[in-house]
Length: 275
Length: 324
Image 1 (cartoon, rainbow over the protein chains, first blue to last red):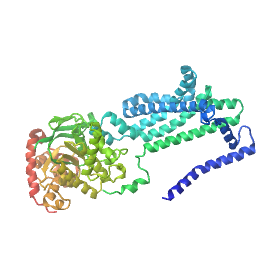
Image 2: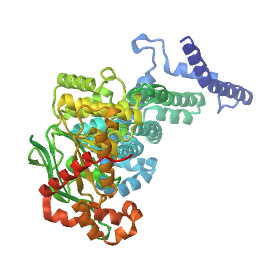
Image 3: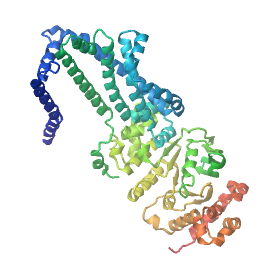
Image 4: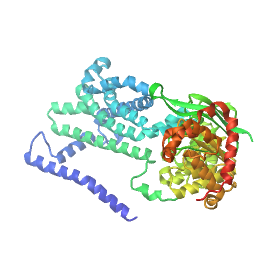
């Protein structure tokens, strides 16, 4: 058991070694080149601290921009992603279990998902005006497809024996969807959700770059227009960190929900239980 | 004894026109309450088609299935199935206990009762302590015991088993066979078991129904005159067992002795096949079909006459000593 913490420490080191190395190289290169467009990471970090943190306990030491730009942006990205998840999973499971519905809708789906979502921003601007609605619409339209198609795939993966088993035991329709189709499709659904989450963040920034008066994308645009490249880099670093954290949170949820799956190393060891 | 299951003149044809394939045709038999009936047939003879029709999983193209006197249309409530492929029949995301409880949910059994019945059923199959595990953490034999427990927890009037022990190793197979015999004795369950294994059908059954090659019909119906409590070693070496299994084997491969009336009719119908000798008898589908499923008999005599005919055959099967 004393191996456990040591192994974990080693894993942590391995995971971050390359990252730390890259930051160091970046620091050295930018310091040598001394370009205004590429500030060194240490300077970016300093700007991050100045941008987002204040000595004000009443706002939890967070600057106004956190409440006015970061949180609204996050809310839009996550809100759009959640709508995507609900619509994508339910529609996907339905299409995956109905051959007829799938065949009718397949050409439409293929057509719609071939349209690059940013190209539709002008359309949504006309339809919803400039603001949250148009941004959410952009996110949902772009992020829906991975969840939808993976859910279809997952729902189709339910094999004939399970269908027969459920039918012969007269499993009710609700239980069938909730306890057979959904869990069977879940590994694929999670794969789709992860892709969709990344797309949601991208489209959140995208829609804010094009038209917004607040938000992370707006701030990046603004700092670039005002030649404050250090600030611009700080926002970019924030986006990277957010993407990393959100993906990890989703992975943790996935591990929890897919805990039933046999672990690759564990399966043969326990199979000898006898009988 | 009351009749639990009555299959009459059951037939099923897949597709239509030139590609039509008749898997079973004119199949009739009954299963009495408390009886363990084995259906044995050559592989690919339509056993699964028959079972799926009985389970209400598909509608046969002709004939009827009656369970407790009621015609089966759709999946009957009073029936549970144990499938061959336990690893796919169990739900890997549910624990063993949840797997056993699962069918009871849809039947509106309250949570407490579900837990109690699941625990009880797992106890019957000797898995009282495995409830919290996931199926993949168990061996194949144990997984099949879970699916037997799941079926038993529903307290079905009829337990259907589709080659339940075909996917486990020989040792485990013997254990599971004895487990099935013990459980059905304790619960007085009515069981219909489909298998391609001749020995298994004789070892387990109170009665063995032999099917022909497709289109499958019942060729013979042999009561098994073995003591109710069976033993993997002594039962299998007893003369009665040996002669019965030979009888079943002969019926399956269409090698009936020429003396029986069925053989006479078949031989007349077959004609050239006999001249072909032993090879034709054992391997050509044409020869087998005429030997095992004479159509004229099915049309004319009906179920009753055939039953009588089978009984005489069975007597012969038990009394005749065959050199090994």
